[in-house]
Image (tube, rainbow, N blue to C red; front, side):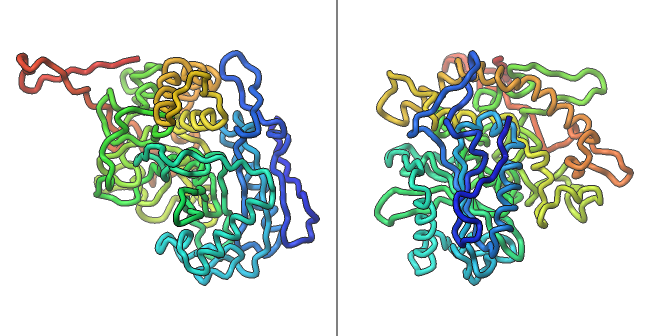
Length: 470
């Protein structure tokens, strides 16, 4: 049974109070054994620490209410529920004299503007008085518990442009979520906070009131799947990693050939073959869905996901009649939280490729993927571990999480939006019916793999070969 309790470790009348969240889940530290059942106990060095901090909270009761909401939402996500023994979750309340604003008079001094957390200038890493004070208080809060896991990735880990934030010198087993109380918008972000100008020592911090999405960035290095900027290709990214690794695998694809898309196994051509007959809705889970921060030249694997959101997304079509424009339908009220449009994040569920990445990241950090014969190079290890995952681990994961059934469930959701009316209301038309998502131009199937032929035997003009692997 999942433990949702929030326990204060200090007198509740103070201005600085520590908490444990769901300690019954992680007191011993464990991950499920994907093959054969049971649990694998974790060494102290392999535990994952999650620290929730609050900025802009004047009262302990307000912060405590936010903690209750956070842990409940966190364990609504199946993958975190199943892996709950890996996450040692604590929190610290520190009283603020005012909410977080652009004036930065709150305890940590998180900069908040009318549109949410301020992104520019990069105040969290500036060397001015407020930047130094922010990092000092952040580090002091981490030290309030005395046993945070401060392991880091090596300084020489290969940089990847397809995951959220560089790994070199990053604290690998510690994630901080800064829950921000503000009188305005709570739109969030995740940033790497640097603790020294002459050293690689960074910490992923997720900022914002609704932080499940940010946790995906901070912990699993997942990228945004929404379209932030329409009409443009990704900047500085145009290809997937040449050799996939547990450290560079991404929830986005910058290539569309069948042999290069990393989630082929989730698609209708993958491990669970699907097809439609007659007028039945076509299967659409695992194809190429348009956008990942930018619009062109980048794709994600599924229509809805915790890593998706409104922004400049198209709900159904980019052809001028997109139903995301204008006021939301009246029955969409439930998924507008604090003014934020969370329609693509309800219920709080990852697409099935993001879910697999979360599992891979968790098993990597907790040492489950390690063997006595691992190469001393982290980059070589990461590639070896991913090959082993594809050959052996994925099958165990697929069975443990019953992924085939989850694919079927997601296909039903998309084929019949009315079964989740409040969550799929972006597809609702004025007459009360729903748009058929399988007829949306926002997705496409994979391109054929390039034909490789001998130089003396060039292919005929227009010849194309498509090889599908199960």
